[in-house]
Amino acid sequence: MNTDRFEIHLISTREKVQFIKNFATMHSGGVPVNDALRVLSEGAESKAFGRVLARMQKEVEQGSPLAAIFRKEEHVFGAVAVSLVSVGEVSGTLDESLQFLADYLEQSYDLNQEIGSAMIYPKFILTLTLTITVFLVSFILPKLIPLFTQLHVDLPLSTRMLLAIVSFFHTYLIAIIVATVVVLTTYLLLRKRPAVRLFLDRCWLRVPIFGGLIHDYQLALFCQLFVTLFRTGSPVNDALEVTANASTNSVYRDALLSVRGSVEQGTPLSRALGAHPRLFPLNMVIMVSAGEQSGTLEKAFSALAGSYTKEVNLKTKKLPSLIEPVLLVLIAFMVGFVALSIVMPIYGVTKGLTH
Image (cartoon, rainbow, N blue to C red; front, side):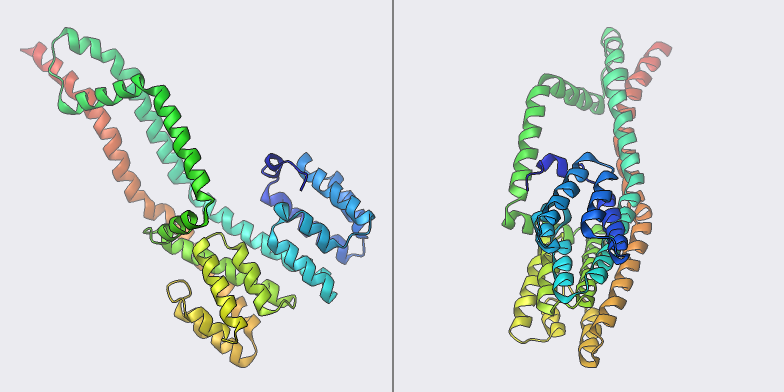
């Protein structure tokens, strides 16, 4: 844990995925762990990750088990990696565990990339709109105001509102910046509190368009990780605990921990999942129940993982077309309001000159 927290953010997910894949390949090929870590640390893209791998290599030289080493670096690799490596060492299936981990991380990375790519277009349009609006308000409008004043033009309401907004920002710019920093800092601090995070995550699940995507994304991650852990021989209880802690939404995390508690008391997994119908749909409960009864739980979760992953990919591709109408209305309002505020006084000037 002696790597600087700031440096951890410099280590990309793609670099960690590539490391696990290469490490799994080298380990299955008979390369000693010490040599594999040395080679990979020397070839690391970022210096921060190179230092992490070099530190792991020293731990191996001192005789520390690989699971203990990954546990020390849990802030880098996450609880999922620690769990899979631990299970692999205990069960003697480390090669398979590393390969499963590589596949899981790659699938999760691809899923996040799909969502990120889908948001590029909306972000670009919003940024362009804000840039045009700021340019018109900051450079065009101030040059026209003296002209309007000299010609004694009665400014329309929209222009007076826009001028009031611009004047307010110019007058209280420093106060606005300080207030923004305070609000963002307060939000980030409150976001770390479990109750606040739970409230915000619950709100996100109810947002139109995005809520359904978040549901499917959480289900895809849950099924992918569960089947990965189950294949390596992890007990259902342990698999549920790891998937809960790895969940990116606290509503799902709490639900999975509740499911784990029910399973520990002897409740079948399908019935425990069915107790949360808003989070785990009926088709999932039915498939898990069939898998439990036929002894094909791994196959059931594998099919569910594939299904929800495809659903996320499909919704992600449709996301720009779903957001586009909202963006168009927002852009039309913003640009239209600013344009009218500038054009209407000019029209008043030209009309006055013709008379």
